[in-house]
Length: 401
Image (cartoon, rainbow, N blue to C red; front, side, top):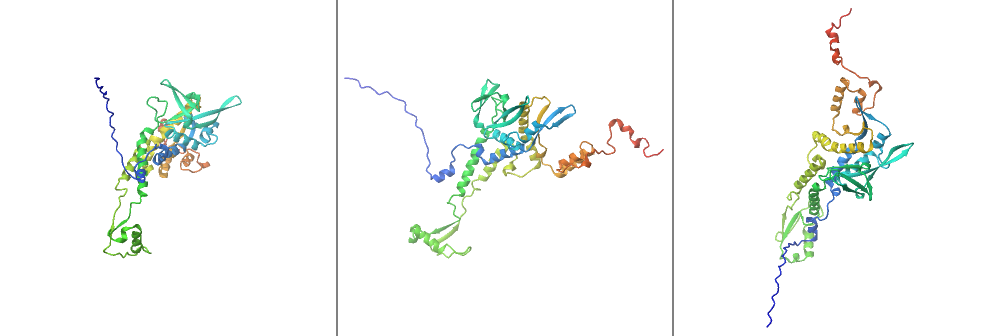
């Protein structure tokens, strides 16, 4: 008799536990926001980046030259090209705004501009600065310390393009890392808050009053009957007209529906806005949180605007200039929050000490130059150190021979 073969035991498949919820499509759309949240589509992030880009693009770009007696401003065709029309189809304001916005949003910390040169009378000149969309740019590392830039599949040396970066990567310091990772969660929270608020405000389950009726009454058995009684007893022709209802069948009660304050949504949104402002380095009052403070604004210019501007300055100087005593510089004076009284007081102090001409002082407060105010004025007791002993009051001044 043949032995009965035993079936080989197989390891049981692990049971996966799942959980499901039953809700209406409207409730799902309100509570669950799916899909990728782009930083460029978040109103709070776009507001911060747009303010940074506008401030940087509003500054004049000056071509400076180092001299033995200090730095002086150069005015030539190159300085005009960079400061007025760096691109044939764009002004300096639009051009710099694109660089900063691309660098902080779509470029994920990188912005590429391709210089194009012309040749005339045996000399090369800067003809155009062409901004390259980030979708057409890729970077290929060459070891740890070098890389190549590809624009539409064509390879370029890094020295042949303008590569503006923000937040350098920890592994490849020549490439920007941006703020996408840091802002991802807070951007998702803000999108969810907006969707929740929108769904809550558009929900129909928020009646201002509830009318309690006798369910056993035949008139309330159908929808048409309820509508008929509501029209007979509740609907009025004039605002404020009293209701006349049967006491045995109706009981009117006031209710307070769930509000956004009950959800603490406003507090969470303000916290997320403060987080966005902190990551991007802007004052919270730009996003409507808190009040304006002059000191906070000036610190924002020094700590956020100028470091980004310095990076742009240095890249322009490194790639476009060959003379060792020339460099580009943004002029940030117009960005600081000054009162007219402070500007007049500071100008008066400098004019009194012959550190400024009165026409330069007038330019500070936005007035045109006056031909009678080019002279340097000084008080009587402001004299050189080596002539302190020549003062008349020390030598019997006032006596006549």
